[in-house]
Image (spheres, rainbow, N blue to C red):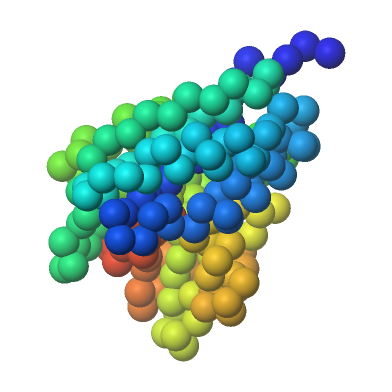
Length: 213
């Protein structure tokens, strides 16, 4: 069997006072994807390698990439948190996801479709770009999961069947009951009382929909 020509990635945040945020959740997702896709994954060895980057007094963004043969690459960069009053503008891509593509449920280095969606807008036009699938169902952002509050305080997020990644933050909010899954359309997004996008690196970010042209 030919080895996959892509890698699995996890993007983590490490802080001097708290260490890695949601480390075990990231490793569990990595192991699950590795098992399903036939990657070699030694979680204990990866945990040890990551811990070597948890020293110092500066918060870091840590990108882990695992190849099919079990090799890992870790790249770190200073983490710059967003200000507390940050609101992102989100736009809707013409680029579509295919809900039956099994790789959409795994975080991989195959990023072309997300890069194409992001390239539809300049950074001045949108901070994040959301993608729909072939059924006009909302899926996710290029680097975030999507959450909406229709007015009752319950966060809704698209189900995996729509074709999207089970983000670590998304899974955490589902497990705690803060969010639940629901098929969402562009009309739902337009009618939402609150919109959020988020990921394990940056947390929840309030957002608003860009004006449609």
